[in-house]
Structure formats: C-alpha cells, structure tokens
Amino acid sequence: MDVLTDNFSLYGKGFLGTVELTVYASLLALVLGFLMAAFRVAPVGSFRVFGTVWVTILRNTPLTLLFFAVLLGLPRFGIVLPFQLFAVLALGCYTSAFICEVLRSGINTIPKGQGEAARSLGMSFGQSLGSVVLPQAFRSVIPPIGSTLIALAKNSAIAGAFSVTELLGTYKTLNELGYSIIWTFVWIAVGYLIITLSISALFNVLEKRLGVAR
Image (cartoon, rainbow, N blue to C red; front, side, top):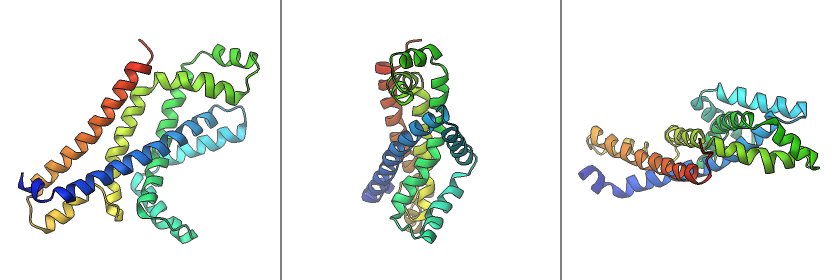
C-alpha cells in the first residue's frame, strides 16, 4: 500500500490524464466513426471511396506509427498543438475506423425496406440515414462499440511515450524513486481496471435501455 499512499497525487494525476484522453478520444472516434459509416454507404461514389480509404489505412496502420505521424509529423507542416491534443487526434482517428466498421455491420442488418420507406416519404438520403437507419443500427451494435472504446482506453497507454500525462507513465517516476516495480504495476492495473469496468457498466446500461431485444 505504501506505493499508492506515498504517491497518491502522482497516481491521481496519471489516472485523470488517462480518463481525459479516453473521454475526448472516444467522443472524436464516435463522431468520425458515424461520419465514415455514412460515407461508406452513401450513394455518392467519392464519399464511399474516401470512407474506404480512411478505414483501410487506419485499420492497417500500427497505432504507435500513427502517434509518430501525428505528434512528430504535423508540427513539420506548421501545426503546433499541445501533445495531449495530438494524442487525442491519434487515438480518436485510429479508433474511428473500427467504430465505422462496427456501425456499418449494424447498418447491414437493417432491412432495405426501412430506407426505401423513408425515401418514399420524401426524406433525403441524409435524413433517412440519420433519422431511420443509424439510430436502429446503433441500438444493435452497442456491445461491440463498448468493447472498442475499452480497447481505446488501454491503447491510451502509448501516449505516455510521447510526454503525455497518463497512468502507465507513472511507473517511470516511481521506478526512479526506488519503489517496487511489481506493486507499481499492480496499482496501475487497478486504475485501468476501474476505467474499463466503468465503460463496460455504462454500455451495459445503454444496452438494457436502448439495445435490440434478442
């Protein structure tokens, strides 16, 4: 317990850093994921191509490489932002590709008649997708979206290697202070467990309230 009690503020700072990264990156991933899913099923060919390229590149790029590209590459083009914001961009964009594919699988479960009925009522493609198709698709894919965001929370540990304050990075300071590396990682694991269980609980509630009965 000494590792935790003696360094509670350090753990707390790292824990809050990971929570912030997870929340902001999750919001970005959900927004981009919904947008790319709409592009993937759009009737406009250029939109479908853009969505396909986005998903293909990001799903097949190692996250660490993406961090290097964002945190070290963008400043070369004059884009200078706080490292935490760069980390949010990297995590959010990377995860959006997986959110997109989860949503697209949900869209494919919606009968085509739903969209055709919406269009027969005079709705545009955007209106039918946003008001009829996507809400139903989201209800059917709540569990896998939750799992994807849990993976995002764990992936945020990579940000510590790029001078971003997060939970895993606390081990460096504690190791230099001579604390037991085993207990250092035990409390780090507990912190990640709290975050992932909280996300799981949130999506369990959403599934019970909004999910499709099976």
